[in-house]
Image 1 (cartoon, rainbow, N blue to C red):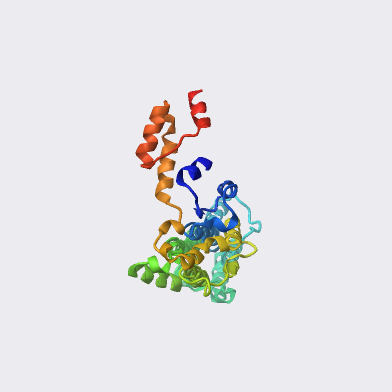
Image 2: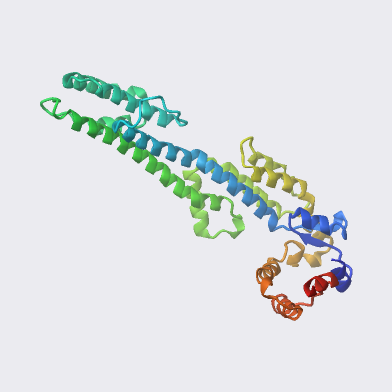
Length: 342
């Protein structure tokens, strides 16, 4: 850094990302008022935290229930194959609990030995099914209503009848699981739309976002906060509000990445928006991109150099590669030269 400052001359301001180690190094040469935080990395930091949180919410709302419904189907097959007993299962979701209660009632009903009693009890069971408030009640009644033979159940047809009823129950469970899987699939696209900057969205993306917010209304508060956050970068310092509104994204159970991102943005708020103050003070800087964001293209070049460093067997090769990739003057400090030569 000393050599860089010596080569470039006096540096008034420096723009960095949110790396704590980088900031610690920069603070050895620049005071607090000279350090700006990259306005590109700020939304990126928040988006990464929100993606983790949205993935957690997806699992909470869809994935966990999908897995639970799948497990119910497997358990029922194991019970019918007499590989499991009818002990109470630990279930998390209300619909799964009701579905499993229905299944256990069916097993209890089919445990009777008299076909006539089974038929009578089964008809009564179907008539009372709506009282269970299970969302699959009407579907099960519709599917099973035609299973009873016209001349009544017989000993010979009992096994087939039981099997058909169990299959109907599992088909309903699968249909519920498919609904959740469709929602989960649509949510994958919706979560990226919710996080987009409004000014960077095309017309078709805005249309897709509107549909997504209708399908997933619980994403609307997140979208409103993100829109407000992006808007702060377009306002003057006098009109801009504090980033404390981001705390509405944080809950007790939210992902740690989101908590960390919100805390960092609020703590570094002054540095993030310092470019607005500088532009107001020095209007000539308005169109200077580097005052707002870190040059990612240079960082990519440096990363590429890092990836190919093991092919640099001599100092001359190192110098050649650096000149080729960076396309700018550079200085190799003596300590690096000594290390390379040794």
